[in-house]
Amino acid sequence: MDSKVIVVTGENIAGRTIQSHLGIVTGSTVRARNFGSDIIASLKNVIGGELVSYSKLLQGTRDQAFNRMIEDAEAKGADGIIMFRFQTSQITPGASEVVAYGTAVKLNP
Image 1 (cartoon, rainbow, N blue to C red):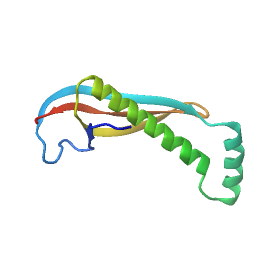
Image 2: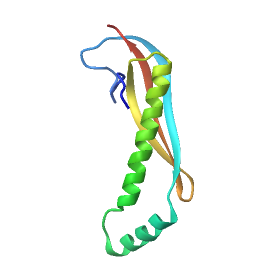
Image 3: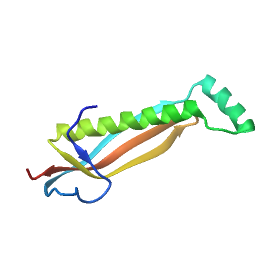
Image 4: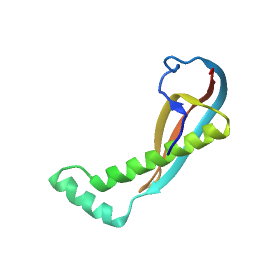
């Protein structure tokens, strides 16, 4: 995603002054793992090692939630997001939600 929105985990954006707070922005997605990944994960539990398919699934899920949060911020006219966080929760066995959220801000030029 090609965005000019600055995203930080802190309360301020270094070198910039916040003009106004525009409210909370969010992006979320729910993903389920597939049967093939579950079989490989079961084998990895026995021999050990990274569950690469799950790592890729989770990274794609975080990216999608993050991009949706940016879209929400842009729709509100924001050029920054402060106090950015991710949150995850299990919806049902095998399906998880990832939420990206923060506070949208308008920065002084």
